[in-house]
Image (cartoon, rainbow, N blue to C red; front, side):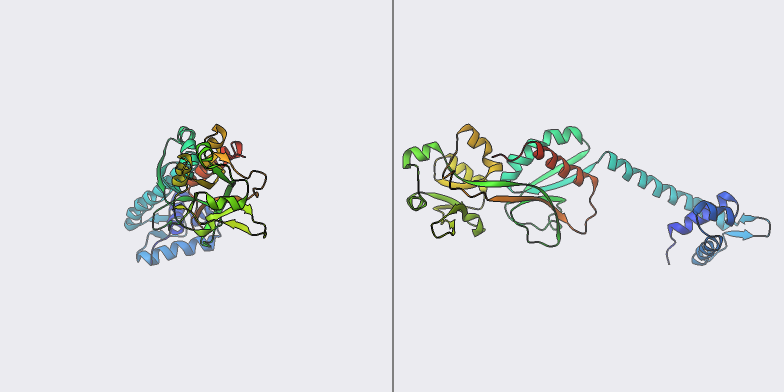
Length: 300
């Protein structure tokens, strides 16, 4: 049976205070509990650490040797706890972050300068993955996911939501015309996702009341690839505000069917495993992202 920290603390306290009674008071224990703890330690070590007389306690030779080890162990534990407390005040260490390429480029990267200035001791490692990943297998501390979550093993912290819109470049509209009805979309090049199929549900309602589901002329797994194709005039696309706000503000992309577009928003969550005790570096990163986005929303 292994020696416990409680037993080491009791032994050192008895030596330092000179009596079991004084040690019990220092440790906020009963005298009998302190005496039993000391006896249990000696039983585990199969040796006598203290000679007890009616007037005093005296260390044996074995007790003197063991005392040095006990003090070293307790000092190491104290130092480790102090370092963890200091890290909570000044987070440090490697932080592995995963997000889909568009979110990484348009949301995370612009926030990094401010985060690095505030937390210079955190070493960031950024990964871009278009699909769902196993956080443990990929050794990821925190991931940002867009859309509904299905994995119950994850703890999710909402950081916002982003509206989706149907868009095209002015060049495309000049060459092929502005569609004014949903039926006219059938004559246009539509840019969409090859998976999941739900991303090809556009925020428009057909006459039957059903949400429009498109069959892409060109499909991609990456929203960023679709964005660049739309900017190049290759077709009409439906993308989230967080990646197209600047394009819309500059006029590089134009919204179609603005009065008919439903207010459909994709939830955005920071996720990590439910059974993980959050390190301060994870908390401060998610807090930073949430705080900045609260002041600079994804945009209407």
